Image (cartoon, rainbow, N blue to C red; front, side):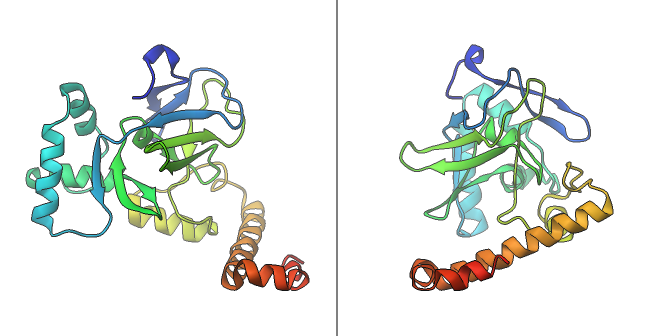
Length: 222
């Protein structure tokens, strides 16, 4: 952890229906850096052969302090509890990617405890300049509210999100966005589908395409 316990603005608590999660212990204003954390274990995102990867992980786990090791082993494991690959399975279930420019993922004792919500109130990011994983508040988070991040790469419609979360993380999301009444959920999906399409069109043309034909790009919004 990067701060003493007295400096933290969150605590690890039981969250109904989710197990453990991080809960705000005081009001956290929008834009606040909630945490800044170094990884205790690093693994490459590119697949190594299983034996080499497990050897690397075992050496890193063996180097942890007793408290770090207990915290690591207490993390959620959605995969089969095979004793020979227990470490690897915990990492697969909990590791956070560093980002597109750093093809690694890591275990962070606090950040990896943050649960998912499609209407997340915080944003995770790897800061290469300080070599730390950071989490910032996207909006004001009141005392007693759970801190949440978004696990997926893009904000798809409800059906696509639910399918991806079940496949990758073995749970069904029941956040505020996923629990909307059907008519509101359908309207939300239509907006998200338009955003996704617009993002793809803009991304396809790149910055020069936007600058060369801004009116054409703006028509996509209509």
